[in-house]
Image 1 (cartoon, rainbow, N blue to C red):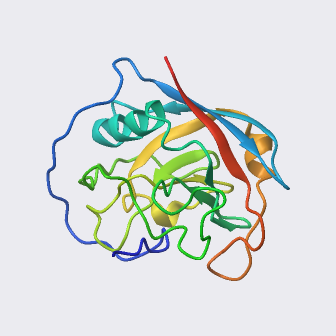
Image 2 (spheres, helix red, strand yellow):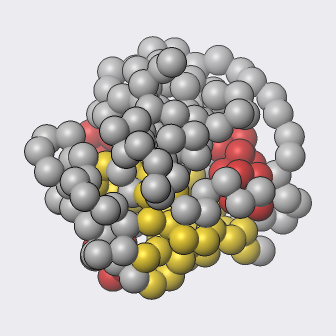
Length: 191
């Protein structure tokens, strides 16, 4: 079993993988978040022209309901909130494994761009191999230019950044959330 590393892991070179299955015309996500910290809706504009394969995968997983009930398992103050582990990150599961799983879809080749990691930017989490992104993603609380060109940018928060700011924070340098984490109750693809 592979473990997804911190979003600031070391990179290697990209490869090419093809797949299909995302809803046609998917341009965004609407995420209903509930928990001890955040309660509300976040809207995200997905950047199909920047990271078409990543956006296709995220949209397909959302359309299938795979993100519903998935927690924010890694949340670092002043940095980012990570979620999207559809394998081990479901609310009520063993949270010690959250962040180590993926989906049943193939890992994705890196789609790096010149977009900078500013506040509200959404990026794909991955292991050390830059071609290992799958289902997990993170939302930036603050700018993180050290991630530029190292992680695939997939979107930008367009509404509800106050909800993102309220997501329950984790502890320690790895940001593991102790107790009940906040959860993506429902994730909907928008056009």
